[in-house]
Figure 1: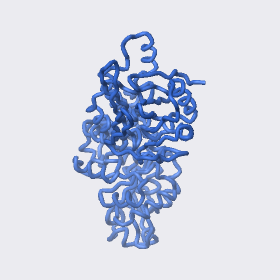
Figure 2: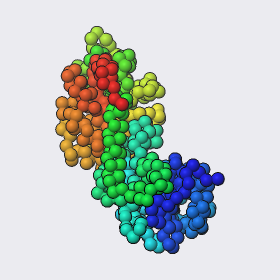
Figure 3: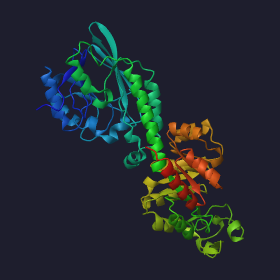
Amino acid sequence: MLGDMKPFRVIGNVYFVGTEKASSHLIDTGEGLILLDTGYAETAGVIAESVTELGFDLREVKYILHSHGHGDHTDGTPRLLELTGAETFLAQEDVKYISGWMPDHFYQDGQVISLGNTDILCLATPGHTEGTYSFFLDVTENGRTYRAGMFGGAGTNQLKKAYLNRRGCSWLNRGLFFKSVDRLKKEHVDVFLGNHTWNNHTKEKYERMLTSEENPFIDDAEWLIFLEKCEAKLEQVILQDSRDMFVNYAHRGASQYTPENTLLAFYTGMYMEANGIETDVQMTKDGVLVLFHDKTITRLTGAEGGVQDYTLEELRQFTFEKNGQRDKIVVFEDFLKQFGWRDITFAIEIKQAGIEPQIADMIRKYDIVHKTVVTSFKIECIRAIKEYAPELRIGLLKNGVTDETIEELKAMGAEEVCPHSAEVTAEKVAKWHREGFNVRAWGLDNEELMRNVYDSMADGMTVNFPDKLTEYIKVKTEQNPVG
């Protein structure tokens, strides 16, 4: 039994052989067939029947090209390989998404795959996945040659933070998507082939073909219109995430009201409805990770020297006081025992070079990798921890973020940029978002800066007074809900 759509000739030697939910296209090259994408596992049978109904022999399928590794484009491959014996192509970056088969060939950007009378240009257009590829080929209809094109991964819902976090994908995929759209805008396309049927209204166009003398798939304006819509959709996803997933970090806890970096400060921050905690990590003389900000302990204790000059037991003799409240130094592991299980986000700042592996091991031990960003003012520290634990998200705290800063961060795989709050504007945030970065501000010492950062559509900020930010967010949400 065929699927929910009848197979048909789209234009020239290109045929549709998929379903409404999972597009697949067949190309007759005169010397064998090429299949673009295989859909879901249950789609394989539909494709096989569709190819046969069109009068082709499945054994003539020589190549199977996959636009990317998601299951709705690759899960049908194992069964179709049994039926065809075809050679398969996929980007090496997307092998992690597939199961039950391995590609025979990995794409190279700009590669041309040729068979018979057909040359298919394969362009790397990452974003939807790290290894998304788009395809372009010439087709002939009524003596005229047209250029057909397929955007290999146009979906933007997969670039929501929740999805990226769940799959362990980089937030930088968003920036890659924007760059891919920019690249694709430079390609002229007369016939837009949908990676999914809803991309180019495949079903509706087929129905129009039944009664029209003109081929509705020929439309040299549709490609650019679609790309601009993709761009706008991702911009909306980012804006929505910046509100729905905004992080109100209690900076060293609720440090305006209680002794900083203490359990009392962190619990007070939670009481004030902060959904994140920012804290600082250093190592004691006897090798214990503790939470402390300053280079010396003088400001908080009156004593000389730094954390590294004291053992843990010696540091526990000191009491930190603020507004009549008192507490003691906190061991990093004890902090994670108390807060690691909670549904909050953590910003862990490295204050001392050389302790990156110990910090990473502790984050792994308490299974908070997926909800932690490790930051530092020292770029060598975040580089070191990324090299040791590539799965960790890292960010740079910097006063004066430049284009060179952004390029350096991208090169090392950093996903968060942390500018001083005084330099945050809506224009800069939009620019950094377009590069794929999460934007979290620091240095907020007054409510005016707090309001400006939030209104700029940043993704988070560290504040000493999380209660005031909580209240402002509630007011703004009531006034201007996004979506």
